[in-house]
Length: 343
Image 1 (cartoon, rainbow, N blue to C red):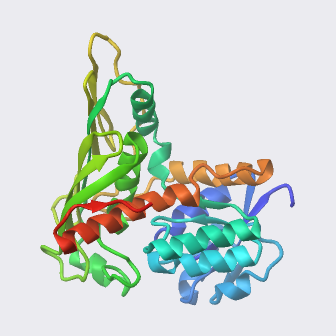
Image 2 (image 1 turned 180 degrees about the vertical axis):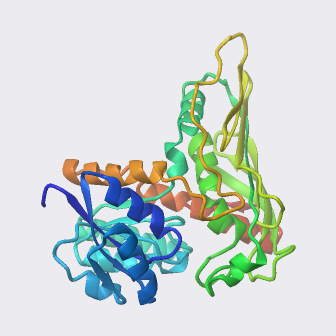
């Protein structure tokens, strides 16, 4: 491998921009090519970020021998086939959220990358936020005592025009769901990463406002394997969108933080205050309002994982958990019963 790790991107939509931006800004990376079935989209990204090669067929792009890593930036329900093709071509994979929209496809992605001996990393950039890391450490160290509640409030706004902007949005076939699977998946991943795995869920989900196949509003009650309870609220139907908010409560303390930073850090018998952290840019009302800090960390982590021959920071197995939880929420809503999580 050359001194720089060479990347390519499959998909030139909105989410490809942070990938292109951080890859081209990293002194350790080089962006070689980008593919999209709409040539104008690929050319626009190529011109903006100095990408030398564009393709309309990513299978042709994968034949190049100067690509080490492929960023998958396609609609959610197409992540699997592109990841497997990249693995079979001997390329490492950095896959956008959600990893895929079915358990079977996620299993196939993991198996293909393991078989080809390539890395499979996932993009859940909220895991890199200092507030989330500090909260998880406080829980794991026992500062809060026995955990009682872990809640995620994921209230975003997406207009009718947003869903009309691309044929795959708001569909079961390619979006795999709505407010939870697309926008809320970051928060779903984060609350279970901090609190631990979820055992079961009871939920309601429905399109209350938008004319879409999938849900624009969902509420779920969680039972964690630790014995704690929790709530997830996810929506794209409220105006204006609110910053994502996470509340964790233990018998000895409470921590609350949102996109803008900590709101409360209170531990019984202690004067400890919340760590000083920078807030993150919120995409609650604008999907293009994505901070690239987390992407930069994950891109450079992938470079290190390849060099050190280790797993990336967020593996396929880890990324699978959020989708598994969301699928259980959908099942509970359809069946009207508590559903045990399948990981």
